[in-house]
Every structure is written in C-alpha cells, then in structure tokens.
Image 1 (cartoon, helix red, strand yellow):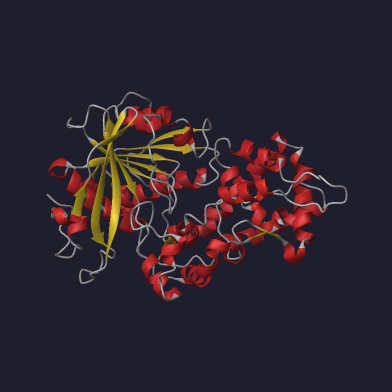
Image 2 (cartoon, rainbow, N blue to C red; image 1 turned 90 degrees about the horizontal axis):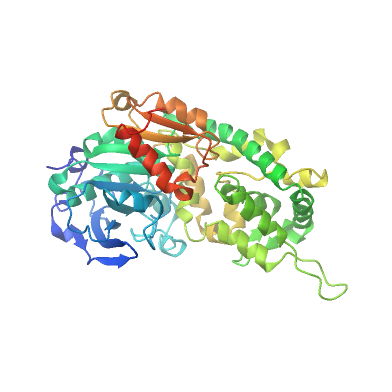
Amino acid sequence: MTSPFLSENLPANANPSDQADHVVGDWYSVPELSLRDHRFIVPLNYYDPKSSAKITIFAREVVAAGKEKQALPYLLFLQGGPGFESPRPTEASGWIKKACEEHIVVLLDQRGTGLSTPLTVSSLSQMKSSTGLVDYLKHFRADNIVKDAEFIRVCLVPEAGPWTILGQSFGGFCAVTYLSFAPEGLKSVLLTGGIPPIGNGCTADSVYRACFEQVVHQNEKYYRRFPQDIPVICELVNFLAEAEGGGVPLPSGGVLTPKGLQIIGLAGLGCGGGFERMHYMFERVWDPVLIRGAQKQISYFFLKSFESWIEFDTNPLYALLHETIYCQGASSQWSALKIREEYEIMFDPIRAAKENRPVFFTGEMIFPWMYDEFHALKPFKEAAHLLAIKEDWPLLYDVNVLNNNKVPVAAAVYFEDMYVNFHLAMETASEIAGIRLWITNEYMHSGLRDSGSQVFDQLMGMLQGKKPWF
C-alpha cells in the first residue's frame, strides 16, 4: 500500500520501500524516553520525475521507555515556522510525555531545517546566483513538506496505515495542506494555533491587516504591565536615531536601528513569558558610567540578548519564506511593508519617542530593510526580492476537499493569538467539515509549549469523545 499523493510523482529510483532510501539508527535514551533516528533520501522536486536532485529528511522516533517493541499508533509532529526544526527532547515532559503514553511520536525536521539538508546562512552561500537560490527555495513550502511526510509514513507505519498528526502554528498550516491533498494518510488531525487562511491568490494582506490590530492590542497590554518602560524605550530609540548612520553596531556585524528594535515584538509580544523577558532586557539596556564623563552606550548584554532572540542567523529560511506561505498563484509584494504603511503614524518609532509616547513593537512580519540591517540576511537581499515578486506558486489547499473532509480534526484556537488571527482562523474552520474547535483565551500562541500536556489532553479528549466539542 502506497500513498497516491506520493507515488504519482516519485521517480522510479526513489521507491519508499527501498531500504537504500531509509537509514535507521539504534535506540538511545533520555530520562523516561527512548529515541531512534531515521534518515530518508527524497527528491528535491517531487513534481519532476526526471530530476536527480535529492535531499535528506531527518525524523526522530520517540517512545516511552520500555515501549520500544509495542505496536502503538503513530503520531507525527509538525513544527511551527516556517524554517524551524523539531524539538530536541531532553526528558519526558510536556505534550511529548503525554503523547507517548499511547503513541509512537515522530518528530520531523521539515526540509531545510535541523538535520534535513539544513539551509543555513553558510550552506545557502553555496548557491551561485539569486535566481538559482529562488529556484531551490521554491521546493521548501508546505506542499513538499507533506510529500516528505507521506514518504516517511509509507516507510514507518506498519502496512503504510494512516497516522495522527499534530500541527503547531505553521505546522498546522502544513496539516491543512495534508488534509487537502493526502487525507488517505491521516487517521486524525490536531491543530494548535495553526488554522491558515485558505483563499486563492495571496492572503498575506488580510493576514497582516488583521494581525496589526492584534499587535496594537498586545503593545497596549505590555505597557499597562510595564509603564516604567515607556521612557526607557523612548530614550533608547532617540539614542539609536541620533547615532551615526541611524543605528549602532550589533555583535554579529549588523546594525540596530529604531525599526530593527521594533521587531523584538515578534517573539516578545505573542508568547508566554514574552512580556517579562522584554522588560528584563530593557532593565539592562545601558552600560553603567564607571568614569565621570564617559560616553553613554548601549550594553553588550542588551545587544547580544536582542540578537539571540532574533534567530535570522541560525534559521534564515524563516525570513526568506515567511510571506510565501500565504501565496497560491500570486506574489506577496512585500505584504507586511504595504500594510505597515497603513499604520505608520502608530508604528513610527522615532515620532513616538520624540512625543514621549509608547513605542510600539511589530509582530510576525518580515520587511525588506531587514536584508540591509541584519548581517546574516544581507547575502540574500536579491533572492528575497525575487521571492516577493514570484507569482507562480502552486496551490496549498483544496477547499472542495476540505468541505467534504472525513478525517476527524480537533483544533485549539487561541482568542488573542497574535500570529494566527482568531477571525481568519474561524473563517477557515467553517470550510473544514467536521472540525471540532476548542476556543480559549487561557493560552497564547505558545500554549503547546507552555502547557502542552493540558492542551494535548484536551484535543485528544475531544476526538475520543471524552471532552466537549466546543
């Protein structure tokens, strides 16, 4: 038994049953878990049977210690992103511990991440041209991630039976793509903060317009929590604006500008503990004056903390592909920048600082000027522009299939989600037949990370009839 979604496009020399395409490691352990590594050789381009280009896909099999030989059902985890690897368990905890009570968990490094032929700043530098890089990167969206998952399912699951998938954030987007084009591979689907907009064309404009409204709300909440940060951040923005070149050097070689400072909202405003982390960073923004008359300067601690929070140097795929996840047959045209201009009075950091009012941070948005200010992204500036104007993106969703869905689906929808807008998520949910929704303001977008056992238990309980459907 093979997947029709997979086999119709596979080259003859890439048979999933061929052991040369699948290497299995030995079992090893962390506290209360046993793990085993799998490496699969798959086509870079499933749509071109004549292509000889291959990549490696890495997946880690995880079971509760002592259950290595038990015939348990499989559960695939799809990580958020795009462009981030799967979790690396150090012990049995959170949702993984809960899932391993009754499942074999498969942690997939989506293509281009982790150990799956990783696309890093250094590996991407091997590309000889920006057009060649774009031609390569076009194969790293959800459609091919799902094809990789199907390849793995056929290899791993006994008799190539269906499995359950858990999609967090962008992983949920991938799960809805899976529902659209390979539902025969799915036993059930769990979504956490991951219901995508599914309209044709480019939905990025509607996404960013809705998300900017939630970002404003999150900023207001932050400054209500920490009003003492208003003058601190205004002073910092004025300092950056008045510095030579309009910013100060970052440890990696880039430059921190007022606009660059705003992007820490990406991580700080929308996840559990983010408000606190931001506040504690700003507590240490300035170096102490040890000698009278010494020049005022931003502390290395603050600059390093800022860079550590913005992961473009380790995961550049996120910046390069972020807007493309909203594209079906249309270009994004730097959507976040277009929509930001509609809110420019509210989000102009220099104007806000001069008026001594709160400087608002931005959210999950990528802007073209980042390719000038962040050292790791500079080599990819031209490729990023080509991706922004690229129009011939293949379909990611099939609304007709979703309207007739037969696969049980349970979704956690976070009412104040800054990354996946509640109202847009509800519009899509209305198109997925049989979906069961758990709507809550108890958690933020990071609910699966922050309270994974409870979130996982709630969704599985809904599918199993142990919890209310709504």
